[in-house]
Length: 319
Image (cartoon, helix red, strand yellow):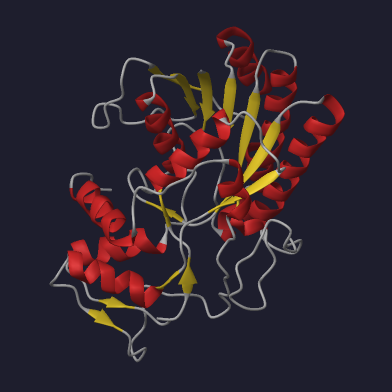
């Protein structure tokens, strides 16, 4: 395959590129900022180029000249609420309109399939912790980030039904693991990143909600599933949930404490939390039966092994 990956210097994008490269696929990674390839070596079948996906002519030119067989559109801004209010147009152009440019260019060439990386943020707040299938209600009153992801999924359906073009969406749940670090496009860091940073700095963790549920997936497992969706002969659904098994914050931090035995975890809630779960937070795990129906997805990491892998990586990469 010849795979073009947007958002190539981002957290998920870099994991996807490394996964594809391990199968000797030719990969072109496009990003506004080039990754630190001196400290994250990539093989010769990977090429990185600077490209802002908001530049319609530039992204169209890369698709026409490089002629990928497949595209993974991972470019996105995951903004804070302040950034979103100040730069709404940049969020819209990056997260939604760039996808339209890519789909139109792909339709005119020999691209076989486009995978759009959507988000679990498209779902409405759940009533309970029952796993949510792809048919669950979507959220139409949320952040601009979630709204652009919903609109992007609609563009993929439009490409399939109006042009017969194979474009699918992957609703990615909470991801942790190598390459997660603060960037200009990623300001909201995962709870795992925040927790590990505190513990590596020998600071006690004060968390306010031990029962909060997240369905974490390791970045390498996320990338594996994306590669399998990209290469599957037949796909049955417009959109796929992608996440790991549900765990509570207490289980997560207990697992980290085993890896970092000098850890101090404080659940008293008396002091101001430094690992705060919003009072309004409600989450149910994603149901991934559609995914496992269409691909042979076997995660490589359980929670303990995945956290150990991430701690080892962060110890060698300071941000």
